[in-house]
View 1 (cartoon, rainbow over the protein chains, first blue to last red):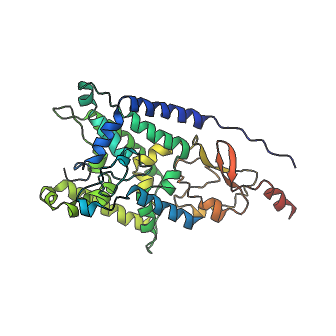
View 2: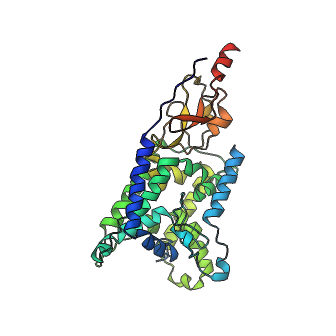
Length: 50
Length: 298
């Protein structure tokens, strides 16, 4: 039986590279500290109280 | 497979909401895990939440962008966008079907016996509007005298925040009850509406409103892991249409943005191995290359 050939899709790896770069840029700008700061506090606006 | 998926969903629900010490501490989880992006929609103000909600965080960063730039901090949301994008590029809406706590809640509600209704297709487009307008444009553009915007989606729409954080926080912190106003009533009405809708229709929030689902849907054609239709094996019997919880015709639109990759079409419906899971173009499971020949010979 003839074995079917498969073609590697490259687009997911390109996208992964782009978003990994963005993620690293965010880290270099110290954004995780800000995200952690926000996530540790109760956002009253977000839960419909503020 | 469906039972396994339910267990995976339950596992993700408890991983994303795994801090059960909140009745003792009287506050939400404040540990280092909150630097991790929740793959599914899960409010980080939920007292048990262990991760941050990407939709909440991206709004918070965008609404304060002027303020942070004035202070020499360039927080444009790239860290959060990068996290969301990497998840989307690998899994796409597999996350909706397997790892979203709010999607899991909706699926459980849909199990309540009642007369069921379908959702008009045009409503599916609304979620892209919520992503663009409520999550990006309004927090970025509508600002107060201090240059600060509002988290429009969280504040005025998100029923997950009301269910997972608004109600538990009012129970946990009685002091907050005195400041409850029309906004909270509005959010309770929205939550009630979605609860009733979820009993009557399958995953209405995911299909019509969820901005995170809309973001992941953008990857449907290009995500690393995806469902694939083997057209040689497909008999167009339509069995995949009947089991689909989001009412798509998989054999006609295999890259549909609405597909939450629950894999019911592959494991419960298709008898011809026409649907498989592929990774970057390579079939991983669900496809037997000899199957068609077997069927032909039978």
